Length: 327
Image (tube, rainbow, N blue to C red; front, top):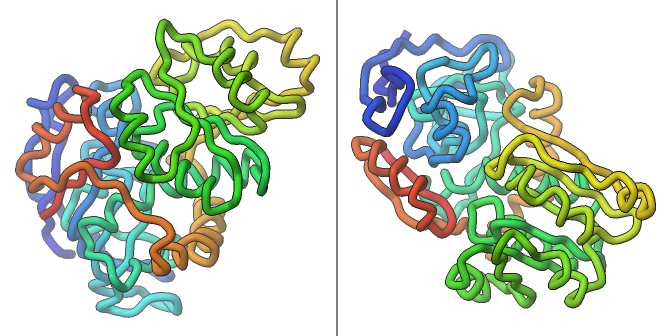
């Protein structure tokens, strides 16, 4: 069993509870792969876990944060057919990605695009898988339809923007920061809505008449406006609750529009579902990175020893895209 270095939660609280420590990592079992991690990325879920509000699911290390990684296959278990030692890979885990070694199932692995370094690749898995699943698998977005993406300057937002454009959809993005809307124009955003006072539905209606799919990372604070901004037979896909978990649902307009509200997470899904999504993503999306049609939006790459500063920076809400931490 190799000894690994890891970011460790020493308690619940602010960034000061984050420290580096040693951990034992088990050998890969049948169908599993040991990955030597080069870099991971910070997500809002890590912030919530650090504060004690979002514990790791069963089977994931309870005190090592991190939902995504990029690295190199170090060893393979019995019967592995999809990976070999030395392969450059990336992926998501229920927790523990901020460790120099992680054990994952081979079917959850994604290949790193050949021309991309591992630090930048670490900014792909969580946000692009979340956006792909929310827009296309859960939301049913297709060519010519409209997606409303909240917090467009976030990691999920910039990923959803690119995926929607590549798929031939119209993307409307919201942000509470006008500067982030402007920065998204370089990624192809044509329709930006500056949210002031929590209102955006009228502006969305003026732009497109209503959204067929709404990708919502905010939750309760936007629920009423989301229903108002929804097109007939539209779908609201909620992937985050930064604006609260309890809100008012306008059932009358929702029924009249025959709309749907869908809640979804990746972290707690069973292996079978995660593997199916990973295989589809590898086939449909990874080639778009190889072709240069998609790019990870990385705000900055910091050493893992500065993980507390990385958390503080994310909490400042000043970041644009992903914050990556590298060993």
